[in-house]
Image 1 (cartoon, rainbow, N blue to C red):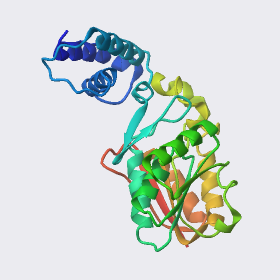
Image 2: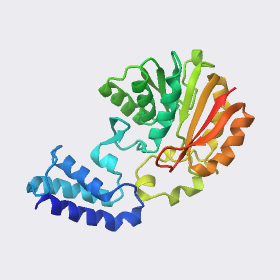
Image 3: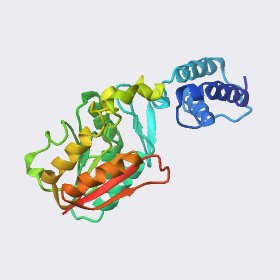
Image 4: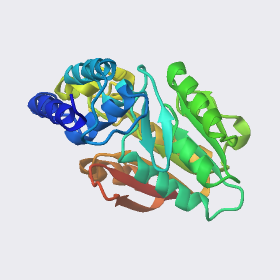
Length: 285
């Protein structure tokens, strides 16, 4: 079968189940990525004849996607800013919206001489690796409770040649060296913020394939970790240091008062081009 027909058939298949799973992304782009993956990186022209073994591999990939399995797990990678991260099941899939969180951190780190950045709930490390790559003079820590995710983060940093990021298993700030208390310039977090009773409402590709601890902190309102980072951040940030929280826009009205009561100033809700989430920022007085 020729490439164009194979891709059109796959697109129809993916579109047919799109509403059922509520996944994100363009079906044509997903079909193309899976075909290139099945063809060991070869990018065919529309009128190229697809070898039978490639077609069989491609059909298997499309079938996996129709179960709701995230494309990133099928391909084994996800692009983030200007680099590619490898990932396996057992970790949270980095979102395009989180690129804005990384950009917000990088902008602030670049203004400082020898900055320290801590990324909480780092997963496979997209934000930590991004800031370490962009600001080589920065000292960066990626913290998470999941050994599986941290192992992937370390492997990605090594593969990309990023030497100024350290991954530590930690429940929030607890695993950090004590000498960093009061010396951190930027803290970032994309917390698991789905209320525990709303997990069942999530799309299949999220609730059935990503670890539950990356989706919810088991609190009734989904803000358990937000409250912790707002309070504990005061002890770890230096005066003038920034706390950046990626979360859904509707939560700003609840989080902004928390930040102000805890002694943060310049509290704002910011967003990137996608506008699907917000980065709530606050600077410690």
